[in-house]
Length: 386
Image (cartoon, rainbow, N blue to C red):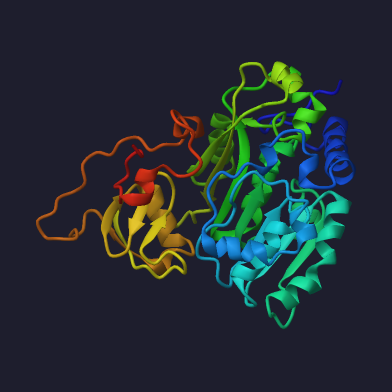
């Protein structure tokens, strides 16, 4: 049986026969074996990492039923502040997330989906006109390409082209995860964001799992050890991954459970940013002005930072750089800690606790279906939630 690359380490940097075999197996699984969501053996690829807010529920309701019925994602991949953005969806499948986002970005924005499975791309393309009319647009603001997420240049995607990249339970299916991240970094604009949900393991998976075709197709066999994600993103140049949500994945199928053994899996959503090298990194006071649509009073940036409108909080060096250089810049007032604080008598912040980065830690204790309640109800100053 062919050995499948894992943790960003493919067996050939140029793409070998094993890599091609994985691609063909995945194409077959998602193009021929699966015809609707119910055909999945496990519930991994439909596991919500976070509850949907009403405005997203409304957008999803407008998506054609045939498109939604072939949805195989594992989380919520809709970041904030989307108006007029150009978005790329890696592994767009039947186009459900693309159409939802096309409604949210509006006519001045644009969404491109790329998928290697011809059957999925054909379903997505079939409903472009339908959704253009459904959303009341004068012309389409979405397109779909057939290609590989490791080779975005092959389908003509240029450097610095997108404000946001999303991916929903797809990177784990790639034999060369580092190549996916490198290509994503290349096509993002400075200050751009990669916001993605995926499946992670609590260990470096053994070959018995990595080479099992059904486990790979069901998004477990190719899952990264979550710590390797941090190594890969650093090598590529991204900011450190910011965890936004996590949800444990139970393996209920007896045959597959025996193969998985003690290995544990989680669906988690992270956000990465392409911070310009010229942007200084320093601790800052930041104040959210409440201008982001749908998040006037409260903005949950990740599980460590929640911003209330009008309230000044301190953030670490990297978050400050992100807020200054990204599409969030107009929504925040940012001042270095060395300058006068929110009141003249206020000193520098005390040393913060380590932020939560481990998705398994976030799901410890009673089942957690989204962001812990303290992140929803209190403003934090660079501290781990609960």
